[in-house]
Image 1 (spheres, helix red, strand yellow):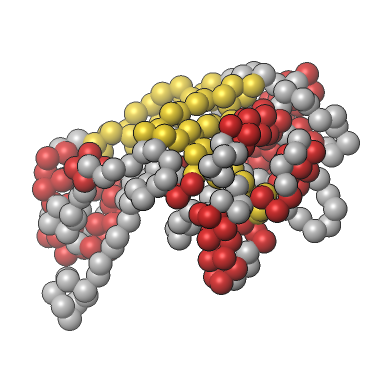
Image 2: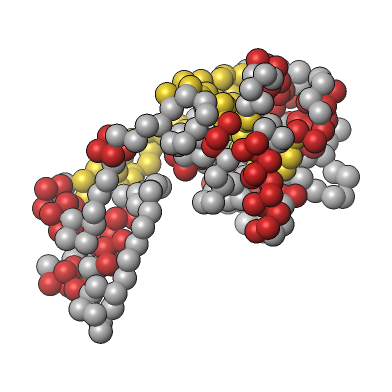
Length: 311
């Protein structure tokens, strides 16, 4: 970069800011560090005080039972000056500007009520959080990361906390299965395909409970041929992934399950996709990008978030 006069680095991304506005500062550090130095903005504190505003607002606490005040860097100041500087190195093209012939999307936010067991367990998470904040428990015994992780597991399926717990017929997993099976039947004549994103409870070979196997077994019992249901985890090499993606595009595989990471960049299976289901976080736009693409046979698609539980 020094040899080429700050022209030796090229970034290409569809999500320059996906989690926090701080990410713009990180991009600028890579692409226009000299400009930041020249303006006295090379340190984050000076950059944030010039272009950012912190906002304190109530948000749901990690244990999910009450609210707390949280201060976040959430708003830009001096936006024209910031964008003028950023556009020295960035060619920004939005979907509206490109006018790509992408399909029309119907978004569905499916809400399911928790079981009595889930409600009781959420209350126990709150008690654990209170003890942690009061320093009544050692961090190596319990901490907020464990509480949050257990909360994510519980929100997906109570059997992730204890495999011996009953299978709630109205759980988000079973609700997702209902939707997947319905769409599979409705589009049998066109061999339309579906994606299911689930980052937790990925398939294992030790015989323990996991959501992936649970979904596949229940769909098979409802009449979906086993060969039409595949896990992205079964393709361990680039060659195997290429073969698997080709089967999805041809309609040979109609239901593909995977995680955000494993079904990310390079997952070009959009030809016959008609629906995408999100079971858990992070619900990133890149997930929707697997189906919201050009060169599709299907012109209308569905995106379902089965990730909401009302408590």
